[in-house]
Image 1 (cartoon, rainbow, N blue to C red):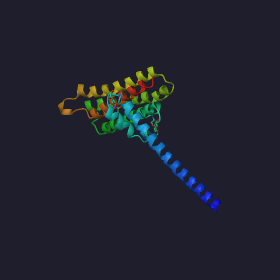
Image 2: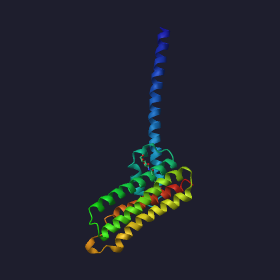
Image 3: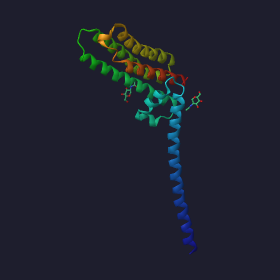
Image 4: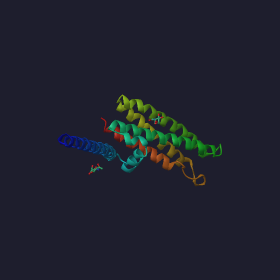
Length: 190
Ligand SMILES: *[C@@H]1O[C@H](CO)[C@@H](O)[C@H](O)[C@H]1NC(C)=O
Ligand SMILES: *[C@@H]1O[C@H](CO)[C@@H](O)[C@H](O)[C@H]1NC(C)=O
């Protein structure tokens, strides 16, 4: 009798420790998730374009596994790179639908060239970030940012009302803001 009561106590203890274990694992998961959210909000809070910073990083599936600032910088770099690549594709698509000899197609060709440079710079930045060469990171990404301004200015200089306005204004501005945010985040790694 006494031994079966003892057994029940043991079972009860085992059962409740599993319950407690389960609860603490769940709490740890919640904690990780909160830490990652805190990290993203705190880092983005140091950028010029806070909302774009948070939304662009959250849109990347890898953002849920971010555990430190370096991981955050990697994702910020990648969303910038992906936007640059998509813009390049978009420029090529626009160009294939423009008359071959026109101011517009001339601008589009220039823009394709500067975006090719820009995405190359961002690709080179992956390695520079790994070896913590922040000076070169700054030089390359600032140049990429200037590239999108060059593309935009090109249109504004040559297009008159008859040829419309830059078809890339929003993309150029967004690209420039992503570059700016990424640079602000890398400053936190210093
Ligand atoms: C953002 O920074 C401001 C001041 O620098 C601070 O008051 C605010 O609490 C910060 N917000 C977050 C989400 O970190
Ligand atoms: C961005 O992520 C994609 C997919 O993981 C990868 O193929 C690409 O090399 C990355 N590029 C940069 C510049 O981070």
